[in-house]
Image 1: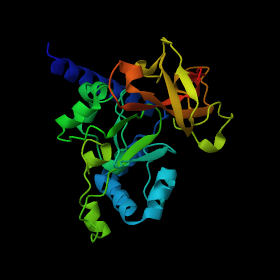
Image 2: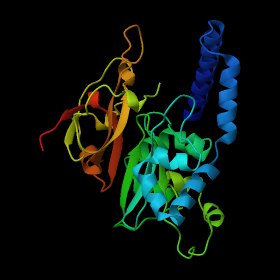
Image 3: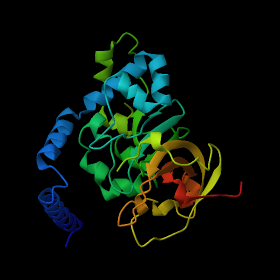
Image 4: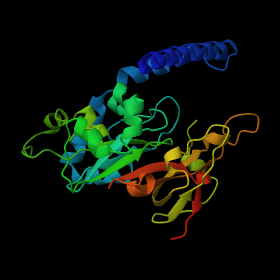
Length: 200
Length: 101
């Protein structure tokens, strides 16, 4: 059996267990199925990397906002009517800033925690065992495989979201964008840049 | 689920800069102390609010009081024997002990 076969079998088994669990919870009145569907639909349809890009663009253009965002990620999101919150309650949010000397990259080694509301659904590679195990061990090599070759004297900081806190990377503003407005800046920001597997 | 930081029930034991040791345990039940940092020493970067400890948040005697969670930074060399990067992991206070400086 190939690794992929095992992985697919595990996924379908887990999916079946989740459906069974949801059914039992609904039958016992612990979960309201309609409410659950509404919450999930709302979250899935509003979740998008365009949200994260707005935050990045605002931080690039407004240095006071950038400092407020770095000091309190949740408050920074609130200023733009955004939220890190998923399905339940307060989710602590932390923005980590790339500089000339430091590059940040995010992972969840335990599972695949990800700021879905700000970046949309997570990519398969982010959830892969390969990424989750290798990026903490050899980040420079992993980033190179993504096409990001950092100078040897750039320090790499890997952030493992092993608790409730969700992270987002604030990429460096590209050179030559001094005259760009927020919309044009936001268009430069990629999802991978906000995870840390791209420069921007 | 997630903790409301307004209902913090204890003062944090650690402050930024403190050296901490991740307890070397292998619990039978659920835990969110990643194996690659167990038994390793890192430095407190900052506290990440107060969150419910997942290890004891289930079952008949569930403990649902939030406790401090910290971002703890480890040098790659200390974790893996090589590498010049750092890894910052979020760890519940229960997982940590003070380390000799």
